[in-house]
Amino acid sequence: MRVVATAGHVDHGKSSLVLALTGTDPDRFPEEKARGLTIDLGFAFTDLGDDIVGFVDVPGHVKFVKNMLAGVGAVEVAMVVIAATEGWMPQSEEHIRILELLGVAHGLIVITKADLVDEETLLLAQLELDDRLSGSALANWPVVVCDSLSGRGLDDVRAALRAVLDLAPLARDVGRPRVWVDRVFAAKGAGTVVTGTLTLGSFAVDDEVIVEPGARRARIRAIETHHEKVARVAPGTRVAINLAGIDHTEVRRGDAVVLPGQWALPAVVDVANITVPGQELPRRGVLAVHVGSGEHRGRWRVLDETNALGRLRLDPPLPLAPGDRVVLRSTGRRATVGGAKVIDLDPPRRVVDAVARQALDADGRLLEQREWLRLDDIVALAGVDRPGARATMERLVREGRAVRAGDAITSAERLKDVRAAAFQRVVAFHRDEPHARGLELASLAAALNVDLTRARVAIDSDKRLVVDREFVRHADHIGRASDDPEGRRLVDALRHKPFAPPTADEIGVEPRIVRALVREGAVVDLEGVLFATSAYEDARRLLAAAVIERGTITVSDARDLLDSSRKFVLAIVNQLDREGVTRRRGDERIAGPRAADAAG
View 1 (tube, one colour):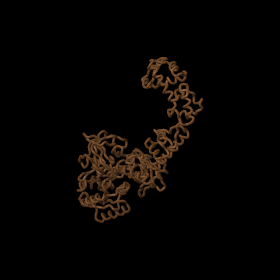
View 2 (cartoon, helix red, strand yellow):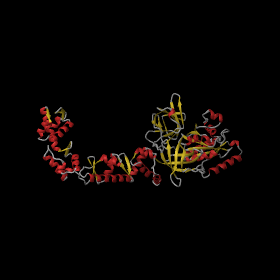
View 3 (cartoon, one colour):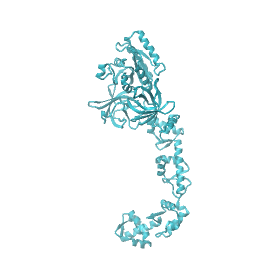
């Protein structure tokens, strides 16, 4: 199916032309039929042989430009209707400008009501049309003359439409389907139904989907296109989707149906400004932002002196991708004042940085946008499918612009910065703790604001650093306090008097060396009393064996067994209680669950 939207001034015969081409009156409401005035979007289908064409008929009255924009926001082909009786009119101008802003590059111009004027008037209408379209994006569109009531020229319209569709590229399929909802209703016996034009990917029955904004989950119960139920539908198609798990009151025009995890929802986007002749975009202010089928409030700001770059703050955030087009209208004058093409999603906060980014290519902007880019990040930020995102990752690594880090890539410059910061922190740690093994990898990663995988990648790429049992040290750093003369002196002194050890102050050893010895396991600190680790292990075996043999021991018993004083023995016995080697019962200790293991 190919989708074609109408455009043109009110009462120029858009709906009548669609009726003549399809046999279906696109005006759905009694009020529209009674007044002969299209108020909201209408839909109809026809078979042109090679293509099934779905028409989106839009209102032409200035009061309903919002509805017109809802109809053309997702189409790539348009049929502009100009009545021979009136010629060029204000909404002819505005509708054509809107099509230009949206980048609709393919279509045709139809001059209708030809039977109501003489040949001279018809010729004047054609000459005026040529003059008005000169220099516009529509200047080379074919022009066809017809009369919907008499049937004059309808075959010419069909032939021109077929030719246009042959030239227009098929809808892109990047594996990221999106339907901007233009109609919502509750179908009897089916529940919620939404309609719209499917772009950028395919949907299938039973797909789990998300309705954005709001991340409302639903499931596709059924799909209909051209009044036929299908199991799967391709992009570029008018669809009616029956959604399960969501009430019709929860969905509105302007929402988007997408697959989970594929789309970024930026609240701020930077855009390339597109101007409208005779209109001037304000430097800043609140504008009506038309995206897809919806109208949203947006805070607007021009970022550079040439008015080429702007920033939009959206309310609410929307599922957008680079390349998406939006139309900007004044909320006061109700006039189309400009348009925009999305460049960056969630851009840098500072304006100067945002402007500078535009000197980068798309890959460069991607690498700057996230410090660590995963595959899904590239899908959402670049608006490509997963194979395309994977190809982007591989290309950036191959070109040396990025480095792999687990499931992500990071720019070579970013990795260089992380590596330099890691080196500085490790060197500073060695300076403050020269006898420590090194800086804990987890602590270093947290200080660098990266995860363990990315920290390890940065460290592994620096030959000056080594990861040793989850500690990061300089490659030349030994750092064992037990190998230091002061450290050996303290350990030797503790071993010399194993159960009545001297203090570090008595030996003249600095606290930092004591802490390093404890970390290394050469010394244990029990309630402020230092023991050589070997001495504590001997005491542990001896007292565990005694409590098993005797049934109970007291602190006095332990003091006698170790030939020590109460101060030292109590520190050892309390530690045995904590480890479960012994249990305290009054003034006695009995065997704990780990006594047998401790006794050997």
